[in-house]
Length: 545
Image 1 (cartoon, rainbow, N blue to C red):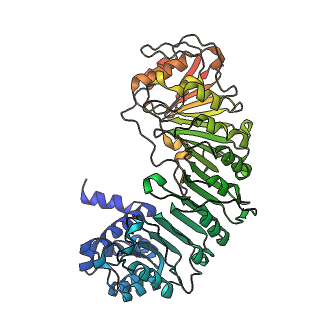
Image 2: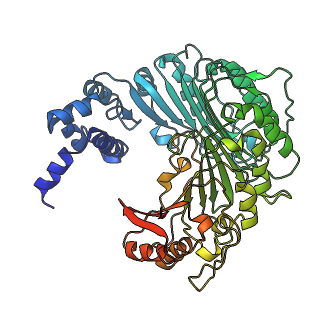
Image 3: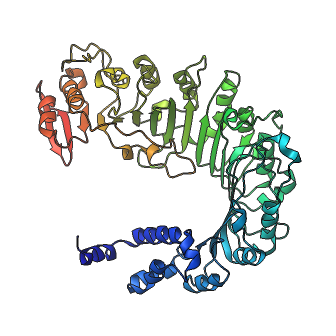
């Protein structure tokens, strides 16, 4: 491709893409050692001079010219302020390298003009018994300095990569912190924050990733009366080496959070999480994300009982999804439709309990009206041995008697004749491992009201994989190890083509059949009596009128 063609292509990019490119390159240059020695990043400085559109985009961006780090000298803030049209800075203060700590003047300059800041603390002591060793108080001092000049600060992130002891957060705002709206704290273990509760008074968003006492979290929530988004997640305590031993007692008075619209709790196996949930009263809650890792049967029943008031706004969902991950995790999603953001996501991790995961999911059923569900999404990527057997899938799906439309992810890791989900959907159907035969089915389709099944390999079809919220349903959905196996695809088409008349009223849609269209159509037409045609990029098989 010629340089001229490349330039024309770049100039034609939409503003959203250009801004992403600008921001990425500017951030990389600002973090490089060479940038600290040069007058300014040559590539970034040339952006406003290419064309009027680039000039408007670059100089009007609130983030392109504002992401700065202590590598800058104070002199360059004037340059950045001029080019960013006096927009506030988004500063990063890293305390990891003792030789590059910002001086007082630089810290004052950054905090004076910062709307967003990230403070990266040095690792703490690796064990509580190291308390006698000398501890540098630079972290405390620099955080304290935020209080003098940070009156414009809107967003603050405090990160401690690792530590063997809990983090006792220094009070960063001794004077005025009324502008702070978003606070994120990430560390292995967070200590008692009772003496710093006024820090949370005006927050609208709070994110804590740390092992933390639920008693302290409850006290924080009572203070943060304006919170609209709360995210709390803790690592597995056995991996982090921290254990919460203080008992949590349910307060007689409910914890009313009248502004909270989005709640995310990833508590894993921390004790007393069920008591915290049961103490909540959330009248305007719109989105709920919960992740459980039950290690004993003690609090299971109480936990699901406490979910009932939280589920009340979504007691009659129109859309439900079951997403089974290869790491032995299953997610249940509730929402208004397949294209909308889900209202509730419950993720349960299998932990070898006496009560299996499918039984735990069935405990959620009394919380929702199953007869209101019209669309269902099913995706199972567990491998090599599937998480649910066909009998368990039958128990999970049979109550959805009103489902009319089903989206089903084609198996990515399993051979079709071993795919337990499909065996459950067609009870009595023969799935021979080495022959494309169907056999005589004697039972009806599992879902009696079903009118359409769509087979796809596209995660975008599922609301749970499009989730842009505070926590992803899964970190990564496993892709197929190889290209779609043509034999397995033809086996599926052949099985659908040989279904008996009782099941032919259902419309079957095949996606992702590129290069196999003719053979798939042939398989679907094996028994006749079907109207099979290409509709766009899909193959649709209907019963003949």
